[in-house]
Length: 362
Image (cartoon, rainbow, N blue to C red; front, side, top):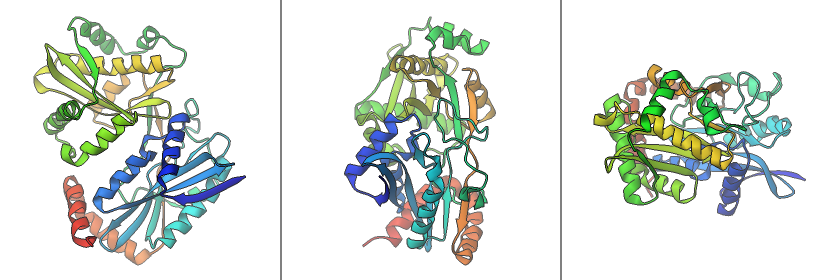
């Protein structure tokens, strides 16, 4: 018998995390600790679970974002559903909309893991839904931009392939760099201690500073990273050269695959083929685990995208987010203010943290 309910009960969240690891449709930004990590900004969370005879067959994590007088219900990417359960989507959307109204939210936004191509890759995405679905009654666009959705997947196909066969799909430049890497005696180590994770994150910080993009401070994210690694939900690894840490990489583990999140190379070693080396080490690991793909994730500068394409990856874009407005007046005010905030997006995390302390202290 199919049942659905909202819950924050930790025993159900543990089952939810296990479910996301066991199904290939699992999405890393649906993991309970990922959803709950938004609480640091004064947001709230909930989880919508669907069971059949008490076994989870789907659901989604929910962020209830609060900014001053405005409340928003956001599903960053979901629901996750077992195969052949897509017929539940409209009833799920109805429940989520009613929940948003109950929570006094001015609007509800959701990003569905459905590819624009209409076909999933190894069943990692929901099957194409009817054009008459409630989903398409929503307005298209991402109006609340501080709970980040998944925009798609960039997958390297590993299914039934040896490492050498995967490498045959690489671009010529990556093949040369992989061969070149073998002459440098690099060492690749997965790290688990607090000190080693901090050292790895320092590579990300230096890379972000040099490339000019924002990155959270280590102090604001260290417990999250430590939790992921301790619970086998992420791998953080470092590359050693001449007894020094010269690079690091961070991937999530979910849906029976690795998903690239961040990486960085110490500036004076950026001329070495360290990035190609680290990714190929994780591809080897994925093959050993029997994973069918390695997800390089979407987005990045033109140079980053070319780098990802060099692994023979294929891009699968998700359908654009949809949203429904329940309080038009509040929504107009928020839109006006959000446009004023845009030039200061790099400091939005700090701003929200301050609002939390001012507005929600007891």
